[in-house]
Every structure is written in C-alpha cells, then in structure tokens.
Image (tube, rainbow, N blue to C red; front, side):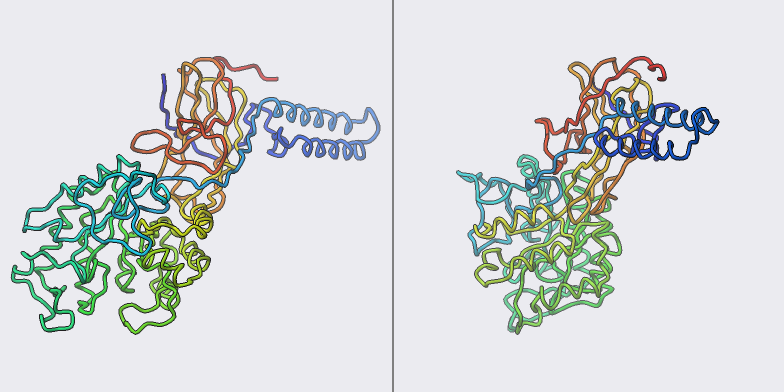
Length: 529
C-alpha cells in the first residue's frame, strides 16, 4: 500500500540528528573517513601538547572531550548513508524542453532538408514506415491560419486543435501552438474581408495579391479577439498545452508589418492573449522592440524565428541580418536579458539546419549564442540534422533547458516510523535554464509489500543553473511497517504523480525512480548510545 505525505517542516538542520550527539558535517561522512581520521589525529596531537601532565584537571577535562568527539564520529560513521551518484552524459528526453517537432508528431516523416510547410495538420497524420532520422522530442509545435480554424464566421473548427492535443498525448508530447491571422501566401478568411473591415493596400499595389488588414480597425480587434478569447475559454490551463504564441500583427502574426499600427493598437492585440490565457505559458514574438518589452513585462517568455541567420547584408528593410545585427542588441535594448529566469526562451531556425550548412554558417557560433540566451526549446522545422553536425547538436541538447544531477545524498541508516528523518541533498542544474513547471521532488521508501511517497518541500522552478541544496527533515509516516526499504528519489509529473524527469545520473529504474540505497524503518526509538 502506497501512502503520500507532504512535509510541513523545512529548515536547515545538522545532517546527523542523533540526539545529544550532533557532530559537525566534516565528521559525519563515512565516505570521507580517511580525511576525518586525519582531523582526529591532529586533534589528539594538539591535545597531548596542551593538556599538561597525566592526572591534571585540564588533562581529565580534555580526555572527556576527546572521548565524546570520537564517540560521535563513530556513531555517525555507523548511522549515516552517503551516496554520490555517478554522472552520465546521455541526451535526456525531458518534458517542456528540447528540440520540438513542427506541424507533426514523434515518429512521423520529416521534411526534406531544404523545405518545410507552415500549414498545420487538420487531420490525423500517418506514422513513418521506418523511424525518422530526427530526435525524439517532448514538445510538438503546431500552428494554423485563421482561414483554416474559422472558415465561416462563428464556426470555429475546434476539432483541429482537439485532435492535435490528443495526438500529442498519444506520442508522448505536450502541444505548443500558434494561431496565425494570415501570411504572404495564405489570406485572411474570406468572410472577414467582406465584413466591412478596412483594407490598407489596393489590388494594384506590389503586395496587392494579399488583402492587408488595417490593424487599428476595431473590427480586426473584435473578430481576431473573439477567436483568441474562445480559444482561451476552451484550452487555457490544459495540462497538455505547453505554450501559446502571442500572435498579433502582420504575416504569421509575428508582430511586424509594413502597415504597423501605433503602439496602443499593438498593446490591445497583445492584451487579449493575457486575458484569454492566464494559466498557460505565453511566448512573445521578438520583432518589435516596444511590444517585446511590454509582453515580457507582463510575464510572457519570448521567442524568435530566425535562429542561425548569419547573413552580413540585406536589401530588405524587413529582413535584416538577424544574428549579427538585430537579435543580440535587441535583447539588451528591450531589457529582456533576465526574462529566462521566469519564462522560457524558445527559438526557431531560420530556414533549415541544412541551409546553414549549405551557406557555410558557423554552427558553434549559432548554438553558443542560443545558450547565452538561455534557450529552453528549439524548432528545427522537423528537418533532418546533417550527419557531420549531429555531435554538435547532441552537445547542445545536453546544455539547453534544465539538466539535473543529484551530486550528494545523506540520510540515516535507520529511522523510526512516525519521526522526522534528517536528509541532505546537493543538486546541480547543469543546463542553462530552470524548469517552468514545479515538478514535485519526492523520496519514496519502498519494500516488497509497502511504500510511502514523501514530498520534499522545494520549488524546482527556482533552481537556476548552478547548485541547489536541501537541508531539512521529512516526516516518515507512523503507519509504515517495520522493515528494510529502498530509498528512492524522483521528480514527479504533477498530473499523474509518476516520475517525470530523467536525471543526468546512472541508475534509473524501469519505473522512472532512482534507487540510491536502503534504509531500515523500526517501530520503536532505539536507545541512546
């Protein structure tokens, strides 16, 4: 029978809680016994030098001190388990991070090396006959045009997004989405064009083949806002919805246009997303600096869609060299350098990775810049990675997002049911970002017939790159029968309560827990020694 317990107590404590005997940490580590013995030898030598002749009061007093110190050391040696897990260098498939699929799901055919489609699927896609040459992922990123989602006014095809959510779950993924108003090839819904809404260009203009809306027109805010609001009512807070792009102005909803409205109109088109999706991660598109600053100030993460553009010149004022002229400087000017600490950074490749190789772009420069931005996810357009770049991308995957290693674990060999169990954990986040969902950290005590899951009171969303330490006590339920238990550790899926996170350490069990040793649970308090 499994029992769940959430601990209320969280404080710094001595790592060895043995009644009156509480030695310092450097004496409580049997894994470091040689060093500890050296400390004791030094202490005894000093004792002999300063204590005076045999029989003196000082000698008697220090004799008792040495005896107490050595006794505590010996007790700690017997009573404490210390574990140093073995690190591994594997690419870890963890939720809400990593490379994404694009307009398809795990196991489905990839795009050709130099091609992709912006049109999201509206029916179920077939699986590839053989495993695609593409990494498995935990995020499926899909996007659809307004004319596909609402071909008739007021008749929204929710079945398209419902199917995508179902398919994502079936393929072991969560769903990230963007709703797009139109593009240079995909027009606005015909009904909108005939609704009396204002048009900003003429059919005889250079871009006259596409009906360009007036983004300051109240009808655009009304009808586009209605689609966004209804999507929020239907999907906000869905635990299988990873994120939603803030889509507002211009082609693909990227936030730029030759017909840009004044900022108050941009702001209104951003606010509708915060009103609709208050419980789902939002990502602000990068292109307009003022809008980027505003959206991220309201709590959104950010995304850009031309990672890897290492061109040095351009004749197009709307498509300047991104990686060398625009992106790094705009991050600073927009003041979004630290947004990654609270919300994710998601990047999309410019063209495809094969285009980078064809154009002799510097892969190391591109990936190192992405890591400096603290990237959590990357859309490679479901296009294959060139063979000679696969090692570089594997190294990149080992650094992006979060990557947790348990470096050191301490717990007592024996504990009494119904008492507090002192525990010490030292973790390392070897990635470049935290997780943005609080995966409960838990300890499981498991025997052949019984088990208890005990939550550790930490918030892993606060575990930024670097070290994290927990020193505290966990309550061992008084209903746990006497016996020997496996001591196991995991971070759990808040939806299912099952292990969710793969750690960068050896020893993962088939059920996702990590067994780090054993502990004896006794029914009665053992006498003091």
